[in-house]
Amino acid sequence: MRQAIQSGDGSVEALGARLACGTRCGSCLPELKRLVEEERSDERTDSLEMA
Image (cartoon, rainbow, N blue to C red; front, side, top):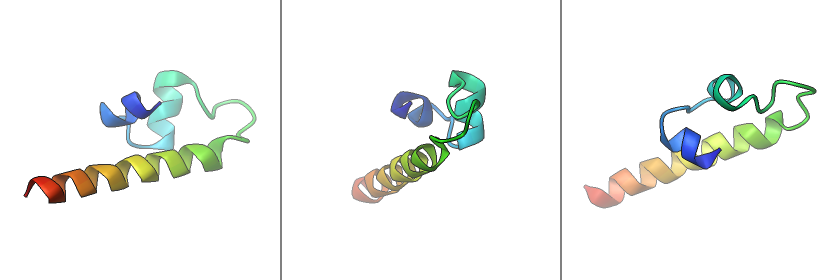
């Protein structure tokens, strides 16, 4: 999932379309949202460090 997010699937909906995660009962949606936000935060931190 992290690799998919880093490759451009930066939303829960995109992850669901690509990997089918979060598309059944939805109990993992909060965790998926947290993971997406965490990866976005890491990307912002990385870009600031490179500047």
